[in-house]
Image 1 (cartoon, rainbow, N blue to C red):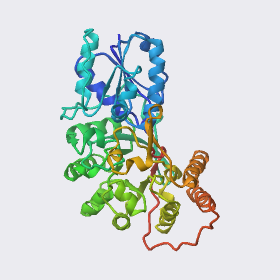
Image 2: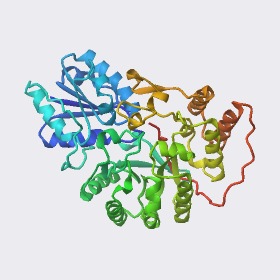
Image 3: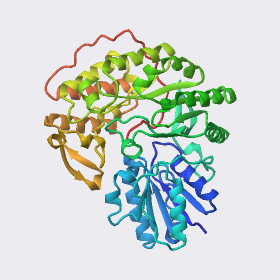
Length: 447
């Protein structure tokens, strides 16, 4: 009989590592676990009715929205079950979750705490509620993926018109950096923990055996530990020379570790995700990104010289981004030949300000930040220029209905953005940095 039911709700089209690692740790401790990805499989009602502990993974905002719905459903089925939420967004929104929906909340390196919680629940002991996220180095086993839906249910890797199954691993957890808008920061506070290379490689190995021909390194920043990243990718390439991979890293790391970029490309890197966020230095400074617009242009040159495409991510709607700033971003993307590299959803992203966000520590917070909308897991804010809020709504609606042609999508956004106050898109001469058309995953990044 199942003792603990683990649920995931959505992880950007990846087979959920947030299920695979807790499952491995709990089974290693001797517990009987059922793990279900609700983005692929239905809720197992018979299990939910009888199990004493249900734990729901919420590593991102969308997952939390869906996780709350799942918790309400299982609470109705099994009023006596202990419901635990775990992950970044669980911790940030713990006050809301613990107010009648959840019995406990865990975050950080929480697998050990989940084992303790399971022991307490099964022994009918009063569960201890951690006062802080767990920030201790764990000896993690290889993630347990055997009971999860196979990789054919998840995002594919697309390159040159060919689709392939894609896997997902992490080589570190947490992050060295403290960007003010990042949900990792209030949990990890600038710390990160390295996963042993042997564990990472064993996880890749089992996904390759399951059909993966591409791997996403999902670390918040793959180059937080550049030596670790290089050792893993060298070993990976030696064992699987045709395997490709993508990774995420900051602009400042592209500049700092520029000598590594050609080797990573040669080892199989097919694209890199980097949080450009804005083409306003004032906004970049407010977000504490650690780079400037000039640095972004330099990063593009470094990547282009190595033949490594970039997928930049953006936060184009903030309280400090003017219409002129938004138009400047569109012009910059066009000038640097990045239209094919930017999914239209990226042009619609509105800044989320969750509870405990470092943005709330700024001296002028009262000038722009409204009340906490706990049900929607964010503080409300309105742009001082009402047309910016209207523009965001219109671009978001376009992104939801958009087709597969990035040029047509981008032109449509330009027409909306320039037309909102009667302007006409200007002719823009591209700069001399050719950008290779990037391979992609079939599930675009968003929060």
